Image (cartoon, rainbow over all chains, first blue to last red; front, side, top):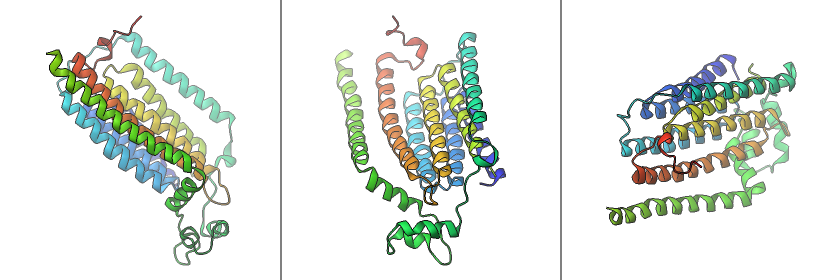
Length: 199
Length: 105
């Protein structure tokens, strides 16, 4: 990944994160979160993970952000009273993350160093080599060995991995989404039914 | 060329920012957003290691499948969490965590 693009995108992601914490208005915080997630999605694309990058934009910057904004509007939190932060919490909120960053730095220093930490190149030749593991007439093989423009078929490869090695977890995820949907309906419905009884 | 360590550092930085937000902020919706930021920061680590660990010349797609599952769980979690926040607001008319002390021992 080009260093300039890396620094720009990580700056975007980190700035979005800092603004998310710093903004007082929750709507501004939600928009800062989107900025951060767009930067992260760019970093994913820079790591040849196109599918994950696109899903990140669609799910986080699309669906989840709209849900957050919707709830903020629904609860009408725009004119929130100004909150005074206690100095002890602010101190804890600075010290604990700084300790965490120090630990991350320590791990990075002791881990793979210099040349060894560089990412291996993915070129037309390496892709043609790795195509041998897939059947000749498969979409993955065709995309990897395309004469004019061979490209990494990462969506196909993720699909291949999910449906060969992670079949059962995928079914569990489907059940989880169903349970979450039913749970949300039950949660909202019960409070609706309870409201007239309380008043 | 950005190395693996750079990506791991950015990921750790984002996680630390999310953690700071969870500790400092008092608005439960903003706390929830910071939790999402921490989940996304962990995904960056997984994708970076997936790209770093080339198997047979291709990225290790186990890591990216894991990220896919994390995004699915995060979406379900946001839906349930926001429903709980709405129910909480209906019951208490507040989303400030300092006003929610009924579980304090």
